[in-house]
Amino acid sequence: MSIIGGKWKPIILNCIGDKTIRFGKLNQLMPAISNKVLSKELKDLELLGLINRLESDELPQRVEYNLTDSGISLMPVLIEVANWGNSHFAKQIESKL
Amino acid sequence: MSIIGGKWKPIILNCIGDKTIRFGKLNQLMPAISNKVLSKELKDLELLGLINRLESDELPQRVEYNLTDSGISLMPVLIEVANWGNSHFAKQIESKL
DNA sequence: CAGGATCCCGTCGGATACTG
DNA sequence: CAGTATCCGACGGGATCCTG
Image 1: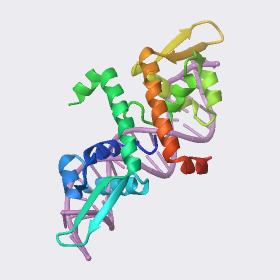
Image 2 (image 1 turned 30 degrees about the vertical axis):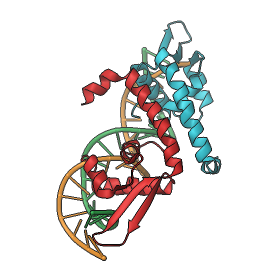
Image 3 (image 1 turned 90 degrees about the vertical axis):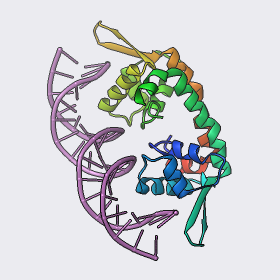
Image 4 (image 1 turned 45 degrees about the vertical axis):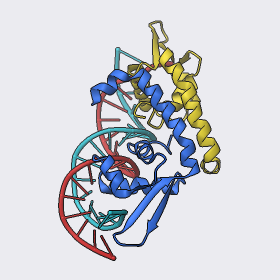
């Protein structure tokens, strides 16, 4: 739980999915997350070995992220958690939107 | 995630398991949790509909908890999360003990 | 026995502005 | 563009003591 916890980690992993995706694109997919938090969470996930950070030193600066094998193996588990939540808390989720 | 998150909720659910168990017994299974936190988490779980609170007004006061159907259905999911954690973070978990 | 009251502190996450 | 620096409030969780 300490690994997949936090407000944003599961969402970030889900946004990355099977793609290789840039920092800015992630920020755009999740407008509600601030720069600071996004970069910190990405750093955490990298240290945990769930995502790769791919930096190309060309200009404009361009950093991309994708899931490691470990990260990929986590996705089905997250999906089960989400399914459980959807079946048992559909009403509460609606009221949050 | 907001439902199963927090430091103690998954542990508490696991301690209850398929049993009907008293407050004091839970406290004894988890010596590290304080009275205040345990009672608050139990209240949360009850409001979420994951556990039942069974009070018998005899003396000495006796309150027991067990899982609702919803809580029971959550257990396999928690177990999958735990299995994932064990397979990918065995070393880190050892170092925590 | 079960759990509320109070106090306390660290961390999490948000807002904003700045930089290589 | 991809972050870092700074500041800040809110919340989670622990310690201790008290009560019906």
